[in-house]
Amino acid sequence: MTIVSQSKDATWWFRIGGGLFTLLILIGIYRLSTIESKQQIKFKKYNEFDISIPEPYLIHGIDVSAHNGRVSWDRVKLMEDNGLKLSFAFIKATEGYAKIDLEFPRNWAGTKEENMTRGAYHFFLATKNGYDQAQNFIQSVKLEAGDLPPVLDI
Image (tube, rainbow, N blue to C red; front, side, top):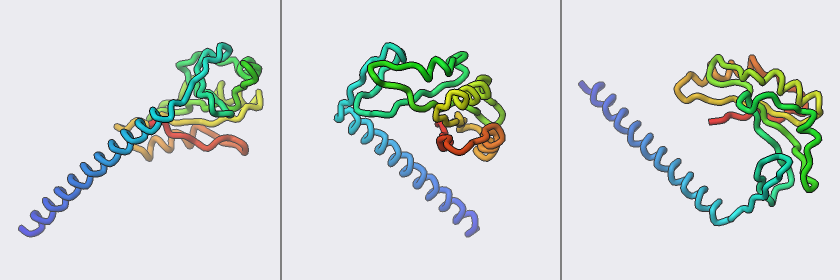
């Protein structure tokens, strides 16, 4: 009887702890969003890139996946607007525990051919096993000297 009581107590404390942790995360997200809005970062539209980029930063890059279609990396490398060039690219490599982005091999090779700094990211699925997802990424991406560290897109 005592073991059951301890188990219920442990479950209760686990739920309280999980609830408090979730509350702290939500408070943190709220605080970050209000701090960012107070800073009023200005964005400038760059027609060559067809995107708006935050003005105070000097280094810029892009994030691509199969959703962007076929990327012409030779053209990306030459793109310039008002002295601003793209310095790096993060490329979607994997998703979940089995999916490899269809354009990843081509994009990975294309950035290397154009001597662009590159990084790979994994699109994490919270409903799937984290270890299996990590294995999918590790088996699919061969990082080399000069590549950016891997990124997890949550």
